[in-house]
Length: 303
Image (cartoon, rainbow, N blue to C red; front, side, top):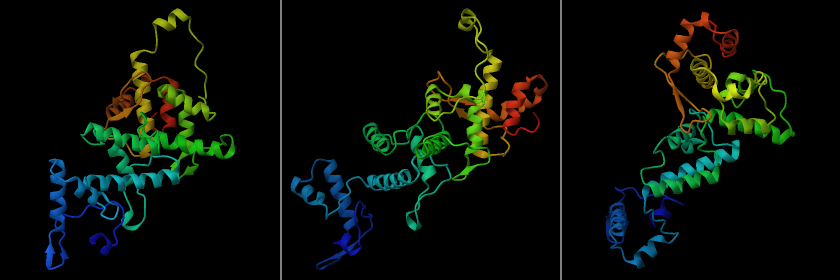
């Protein structure tokens, strides 16, 4: 009756302090009564007949109040995915209207964090399946910004049959998709992408601007790869590209670190980007022309 009087449908947990008028009782503690039924169920003391009555659709009993909030999040995520084709919003993105507006970007960031689906392993696995049913790439191993841009381009390919010519400065949903596309083609950026990222870009007809340098003899390649300094520079460059993509021209704070995906590494690699930028600037006279050019393409004025 309380649900009907308040025009409540779907999942909705009765607040603990709710009191209602029932017959001669002017203030029946409905919220506390519902809480007692939950305790009885957990203790195995709730009669089966009572549970059946409470499970009826018209009763709308919420045995785990946290599920109400979770279902609300899922509904918002489904709506966003249906409208945009991805579950990779910017972290500051909001979705919905009026009271139903949610911080969809922050939701996704929280869900992707370690333990973001809760401490209960069984429930976390179930929630992961629910999210995967909405978008299999919800927890992709690369940044959501990369996933969003890639999906936008994939939608263009689906619509036109091929990837149109997109120059830097072309904006889509507030993102400079042309600048991002140009950056992915740069050899330094391409080298830092994972094999699966290469495959996804290749399926869209995107390839690096320059082919790999002429191959060295097989024996040399097998025993000698890029030097540690070269690897460090490429990782720093990839982290900087990721920062610029997300933050634009905002200077990198010296204490900032950036996580990047590195092919061959199971876990994201943490790059102390602020320190790297400072050190790279201090030794810019020792950088190669190719390295300086790569920095200039990311908007580094001193390169």
